[in-house]
Image (cartoon, rainbow, N blue to C red):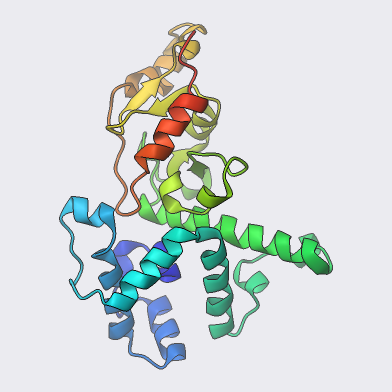
Length: 243
């Protein structure tokens, strides 16, 4: 399930070096692992909406794993990352490429720090993979300039922190504008521009960066579509409705 979330959908095949490596370490064939990832696709509502049914071979166990992750993303993402790292002969810190000098030496503080960094990395990787590493508003495809933006902020609700459906792939400017409530998405995933932004004047810069996208539907993700309840929370609690 961890791999399903983080490996780009177009790379669910037996020639993917990562799938080859993990399959060998699991004692399975690359084809069987690739098939398992495709089976998860048949359970993903985003794929169902697009008419993609995977291989239609999802088992009862697959459904149980899918539901288990959905019930507690924060716990299961970290546990799966630990198991994946162990399978590859690494520590979870090494797998997440955490600088050892940043990690507290020991105790609960160390564990909390590592778990947070691992889960944050998972969230970014999963969200960018879902949107094919493109800003969902502008289409910008420069990973270094993209942000896995939380719809409900990290600090607001632990249950939504790591859920990829609580994420949008945005460029740094639109991420900041979304966080500050200058833009939002409606129930049809169309861009809303706050009246508060217009108080700065409909300058060429504001028009080019924001107003030109007003009312336009975002590029929908391949998987993990943004949760409409999360977007409603953002409109209610973050979006600046008045000038």
